[in-house]
Amino acid sequence: MADDDVVNFTEADGRRIVRAVRRVEQLPLVTETADYGTPVRSSDRLGKVSSPATLGLSTEGTETAATDTWSLTGTTSGTNYAGVPLEIWQTCRVVYNHAGDKKLYAFQRKLTFDTTGRLRLVSAETRVEVDAAGAC
Image 1: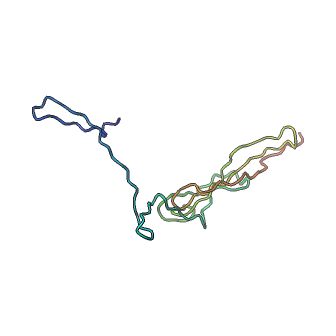
Image 2: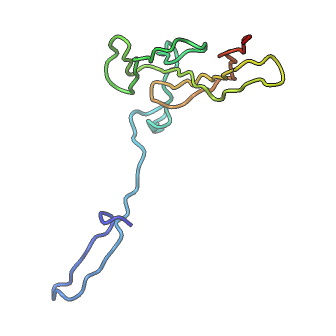
Image 3: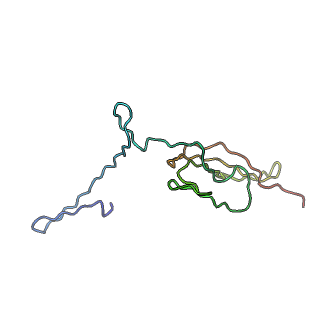
């Protein structure tokens, strides 16, 4: 229990201290009402996923580090995206095919986040050839 969760009381004679836990109930933020006056919590509202910013590639790409960024709030400027949906290409695993074609493969998935920053979709894997064995 954290110190800010405890309230100390002292009796008038100064001899007795009572410690009590302060309970705080987290209520949903009501931002609007639906038809017939039903409250709608902001946490129940999904953001849009159309026209997203994209970080990463579904292909191998280059050896240069990317400098583009994304944040939930702010203003989009150049390659610094803000307040828009986001797609991220993530390498999930790397496999070298010993028994077959002797190639190194990376498997990537696209993660799609809406404008509220919630993960909404994960794609199937995309296979990317990273390297192949050559003659020595």
